[in-house]
Length: 313
Image (cartoon, rainbow, N blue to C red; front, top):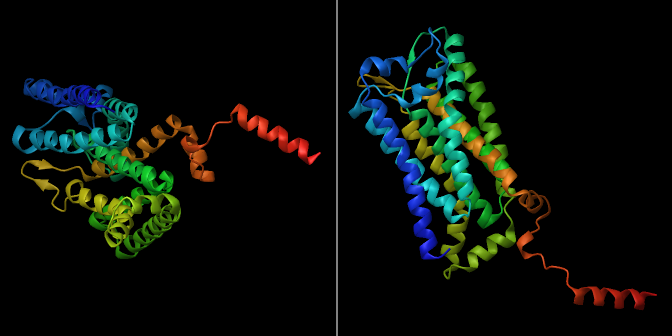
């Protein structure tokens, strides 16, 4: 990709990314009584509010501004990662899915959760969508691991999702100790299992080639070996923001359940959307074959094959 193409892609991405803050601010400028009609209430269902509630905010300083900043923190690196990985189409699929479909998914899950817990509440804010973009960013890093080390993306995504579930459980579970311990043990077992499978799926030849690019052998070995653990460090760091221990901040109550749901669904949606784009990668994962390095069959090869057949006769 040359400089001109890169500039064009960056301008295109910037215009797309800036569309959401403009929409959020425009809705915030509406009269308060109109904004209130767009809020989702668990005791008075409005199909339109299933979508619109994610774009409405209570106030500017404590709600809208933090969500806009968090949006840029998630989406700008996501676009850059996928652009460098030649996955620009995946970014736009994820962008429109998270902005147009994810709101309905999160609202439906939240309504069911409210019915289960028998609570009545209002739901509004873009943080659930931001969490979905952070989940997609985690998957973008998984794709980087796949490109550099040929890791199995399904195992890596599942390990990331179970690790997020484990952090969420340990942070917020209010169940009795036995139930909490049991759930945490199941999630920990699942996380360790898929993390182990992810590590075992690393292609040693790709790993060695990556190490050869770094002159210092000790730095090379340490850097390459830390690529996979860094995935789980990223999830832990993201969890500090999307799973805060103090859920009441000013006049805003943070819906950590929506944060968790958006984050996990963001990883899963990215995994599902990526697979159909690169069908040959499934063969790569299964047989260790790099399709780009397969030598095409030429007429010269055909002649050599004919000679071998005649000699065998």
